[in-house]
Amino acid sequence: MVGLMDRQTEISGHLKGSFGGAHFGPISGPFIAKAEAGNILFLSGSIHQPIRSPMIKLTSGKDSQFSLSNVTIGNQFHWERKEVQTFQGDLLFHLRPQGTICVINQIPLEDYLSSVVSSEMSGDGPFEFLKAHAILSRSWLLTSLDRKQKTEEMVIPKENIVEGEMIRWYDREDHDLFDVCADDHCQRYQGILKTAVEKAQRAVQETNGNVIAFRDEICDARYSKCCGGLTENFSTAWGNKQIPYLTSLPDASISHPPIKTEEEASNWILSTPEAYCRVGDENLLKQILPDFDQQTKNFFRWKVEYSRRELEALIRKKSGIDFGTLQEITPLTRGPSGRISRLKIVGSKRSMIIGKELEIRRWLSPSHLYSSAFVIKKDGDRFIFHGAGWGHGVGLCQIGAAVMATQGFSAEEILKHYFQGVEVKKVY
Ligand SMILES: [Zn+2]
Ligand SMILES: [Zn+2]
Image: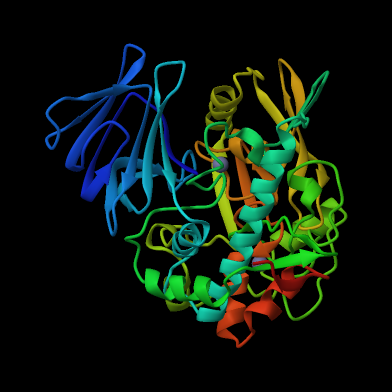
C-alpha cells in the first residue's frame, strides 16, 4: 500500500485499460475525484452515475494503468515539482475525517521495487549498482513493514524538548492509511514510465528475495544521495542508539579518520578529499542520476550564502521563532562525517539549541540545506555556509555506490562496503 497523494480536495487522472469495483461496472478514461459532504464523488465519462462513497477501490484489469495529474515529488526539498505519473496496480481513494482525500496504490512488492530503483537513481545506471539498490530497497521495505506492525502498540519518542533546546527527528511510523509514501520521506516511487525501467526490472528479478542481514535479522537499510566522503552514524539523524552496520566509515579506498573537533570539521569540509562519491565526470553523473537530480550540482562540496537579514527572516519563517538580531550560529555536536546534530542559534531576543540533522537543514534554507555537514564563516554582515554531501549520510551513499559499480565492484561488494558485517541472503 503506497500513498501517492494525500490531503487533496480534488484529484484528476486517466484510466488506461479497464478498472472494476464492487458496485459498479468497468471504468476507463479520464476521471475526477472530489471530496464532498462526507463522501468522495467520483466522476467518469464511462459511467452514467457518479460514485459516492467515503472509500472507493478501483481494481486493475490485466495490463491496465492509471495516471494522476499534479503529483508532487521532492516535497519541500529543493527539487520539488509536480508531474503526471503513471502506475500499475489497484487504485484506492480514502476520505479523511478532515474532508480531504488520500490516494493509495496497491501493488505487489517486487513491482513496487522496480519502480523505486529507477526513480531513486537513473534506471540506466550500472547494472551491479541497480542490483545493489534492489537488495537495499527490498531490505528497507521489509524492515519498514515489520516495524509498522510492531509500533502500532508502541509509542516511540521522536522529540526531546527541554528548556532552550529542541531536538527532533522524523521517522517512518508517520503513515496511517498506507505503508509507505511515494516520496523522499520513504523511498521514491514515481510510477512506471521512467526511462529504462526494464533494466531496473531485471535487477529486481535477478535479486528476487535477496536482502542484507546482520546476525540473521534483515537490516534497516538506510541510504542517502552523497555522504561527502565519510558516512554518518544512525544516531546523528535519528534515535540515540548504536546500530553496528549503520556506523560511520570512509567512503573511499583509502582511510579517512572520523571527525572529532571543529578544526577537523573545517579542514574536512573545506577540502576535497578522495572518495567514491567525489565525481568530477559530468557524463558519469548523467548516467547515474535521474533527470531532475541532475540540476543539483556541486553536492560533494557546496556553498550557500545569506545576508544577516535574509537568514533572520528565513529562520523566523521556518521555526516560527523570532530570535531578534542574529548574532551567532554555533555547532555544538557533530557526528563523525561532520554532520551537525546540535546547533546553537544566538539572537538578541533569545537563543536556542536545535537538532537533529533534518531539522537543522530545514531551518536554514527556504527548502532544505543539502546536509548538516557545514561550517559557517561570517563576512561582515554575511553568513557563508560551506558544506559537504547531500542527505543524512547514513548507510549507503548512492553516488558512491554507483561509482563503485563503474569501477567493477559487484552488488554484494558494494553493500558490504557500506554496511559492515552484513550478509546478502535470500528470504523468499
Ligand atoms: Zn513516507
Ligand atoms: Zn559517499
